[in-house]
Length: 157
Image (cartoon, rainbow, N blue to C red):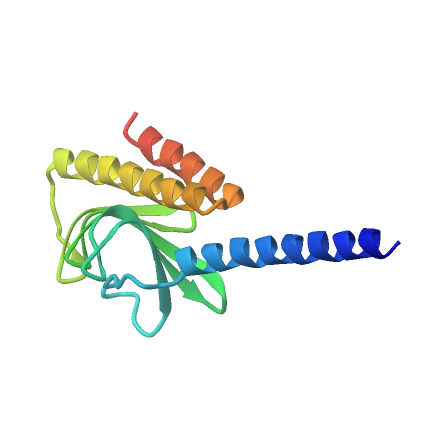
């Protein structure tokens, strides 16, 4: 009887240890170690970046989410250079604003190609976020961003 109880205790301890290790890996991967500058209109609110990081700055395609009261109020999907948004789409509810970004603000343009390029960058940003969430085992978020990529791509059809 002693051996059976001892074996059960080892298995329980091993299971708890593996569960803690899995949650630590997820927490570390989700930690905001990468800085991304928000759009100028996003003052005094918290943000979270999902995408690649270089020298502690957002670099490449990804998604920057704006939170207010614990809820996402806007998301910028697109390309970041040295931690700053450069090309993409801001989604606010069911509305989109697309184009090039300089100093945190969208640059006015009448060039249709700029908008096409912005939605392509946004699609890549959503797919980069999907990839990051897939890597840490967060399937619901990965599915959300994969579906968002399809919605963004469809805007140019």
